[in-house]
Image 1: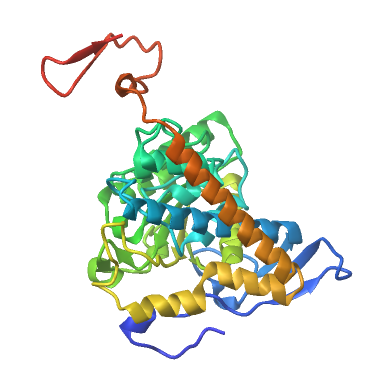
Image 2: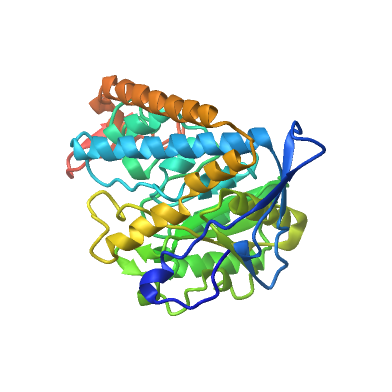
Length: 390
């Protein structure tokens, strides 16, 4: 249970997110679904009703959630190793600790719904259909990469995932534009635009809020609040850290972002809200990254090692789901170990495949700049006299 005792700032970032659940099966232990009652502290609302705390979900979906989070973490651990081996260069932002957000979101959406995020995008790319090999190859700058080796850590895309964007906050108005297109075309789908607490004070975020509400777009703005924007604690950069209330005229929800089931339930609620014509909604996912802002940040100069360890030990999203699966006999310990082993083997194989891929040809510098047949006769190079003619 969540404690009501006020604690000091150092402990705020380490407070328990994973809360006890009560689970009962439908009809018998052989039932395909379970009914899970989330803790009442899973959500907090602003100008809207709370999502139901009663989650009906199949046992198969719960196992898929676990498998996805384990695989995602293993992939990010491999990325960490490749970076430290100097095989990955430049920027590299890992989502270790934040897996529940991407996995919980995807299980509540369809392929018609769109997602756009910032540069901590590997997990979303994977959940939106990118293969592990293509993600790792992109990090390595190889032609088997999901962006042909030209995008790197911050620029990955799939047909229903719009990145992976490197400019802080710039993806939010783009997401509003995608939502506008959905409404204009009459699609019964929503666009989820993610940004971090560090980007929450960008002017373009508030401009996107305004247009989304003005036109009642099916836009869900999702703040992944991992408590630190680069190396700055949220309360040192934001006068109002209740990010789910900052839409003013847009209702909002604060969500336990370390609980994959709470995320799933909130996102399902948000989609229903927007596609039913109620306009935009804000979600604040309270989450936590175990590593630094990027691989060049040790992540321990602005927070204590004890804080990080406390979060790992008491609030890990994978461990939390694992305990539930085992406690209620949804899966056995041996099956759990088999999933863990399979994820390790899959990622290890993907690493070798990515490393075996060659670098893109230099001619690829001039491709994928403009839409084909757009009528652009040439592209300027790095130097004034350098041109490439099509």
